[in-house]
Image 1 (cartoon, rainbow, N blue to C red):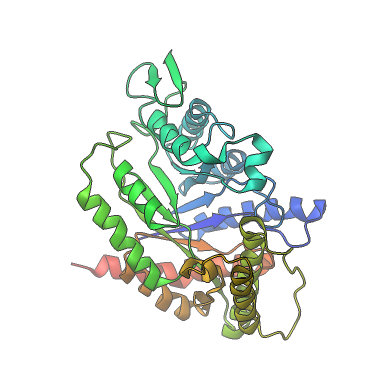
Image 2 (cartoon, helix red, strand yellow):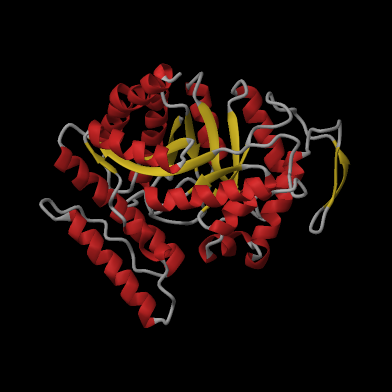
Length: 378
């Protein structure tokens, strides 16, 4: 099993000074992650999503991290692939350059960036995002199969051109797709690429998603594969804060997740501005339940169906507590079928010292626990 850290660059009270600091703090966390034995760092790409994600140029962030590290893998989790965000040929060029300079450490994920806030910034056609993502993956999947790329698709027509430079990894860095629904899991499996499961629903839901992914792998004919290399890797999100003080870790972690849920709800669901204040002594678990109830009430008010995913980001049953608590939770994720644990540590209200201590605790206790089990396995 692999272990990674994913960065959104979330920010409560987003002043210019604090924004600059959170980017530098994320770099510090990524460098420490390598020292602590993590296998990979991921960075998202989002645009104009104040509070929720200030990581607008992950290719720059990841290049900076790659230059500060030597072994940890560098993951785009994900590139917004609709063409007005990033032309597929430019994605391929940038990916190859970073893969080459990092010594073959790049992983390349694809996503839609489908909020109205983002698509309106770059003139993206919301109705074509899924189709454009798939065509972009097909272009990248064959960019270096021959000396020159030639593509004649439904949306893009590219005459013969060399894509320079060539990546270190052949035929290209491993490909992934952001997945939050059964439909995208099926798509990832049929395309032959890894699944980045970006959900908070917990091990029970993860087990069901793994079953859907495996069923689609078993049923695929190969007709939709985007590359000659298949990547059936299943990575799952794991919100976590680990401290010696269990209650402090739960308070800090659940508060951070509540900010995450509120900020994503603001941009994806029209909720109000996230509550930025951190109040000492507040029962954060109770506040999370109240926030979930408010979401349900708003959906009912607008006659929108309440689905299990509607309040998933308010589920507080995650790896918050001591290292032993984190180990127990990761065991549940492993049993649910996770190939990789993507730790979400940097949430908007979480102090830098708590982020760094969490990474140390994972590196000193959590990851070694599972490495020892793997080493002892027959």
